[in-house]
Image 1 (cartoon, rainbow, N blue to C red):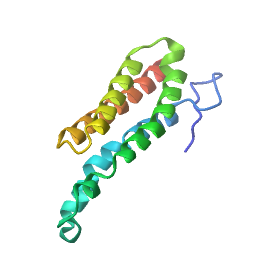
Image 2: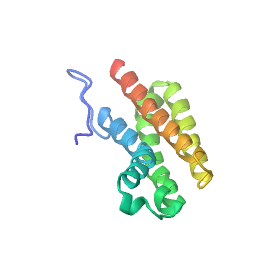
Image 3: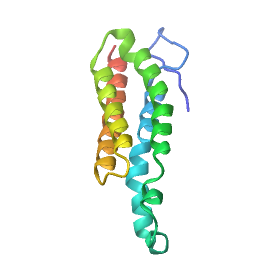
Image 4: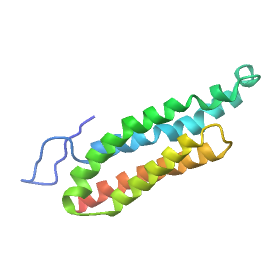
Amino acid sequence: MNLSHNDGPGTESSGFNGPGLDGAAALMSSLCLVHCLLLPLAFALSPVLAVGLADELLHGPVWVHWLLIALAAPVSIYALWRGAGQRGIRLPWILAALGFTLMAAGALAHDRGPIEPILTVIGGVIVAYAHWRNWKARKAA
């Protein structure tokens, strides 16, 4: 993956900026989304595995949520700082903060029914949208 970005002729820059970093950050923050949506589906489609499995196996241990948040947050902060932060644009920061707050609330609601995946999925989508907005703002500048 190419993490450098060229804003146009004569404006080539180096380092971790451009759509690659926002894409990587959005992907990392969406891992909880994939975990919440695909893992239960995989178990449901596999009767041998689904029958008699504890909820812990279906949703995974709570530390997985915290690990994914801990991996995604620094990449997101750096990507937003390189984009929206350097241009004084606040919306991507606000969206990302909301999304990570919802993902953390989902982790705190572990084993409390459907609220966990609902919060995590909504949070992951919001963070991914924040990075899309960040990328669009950087591209427009």
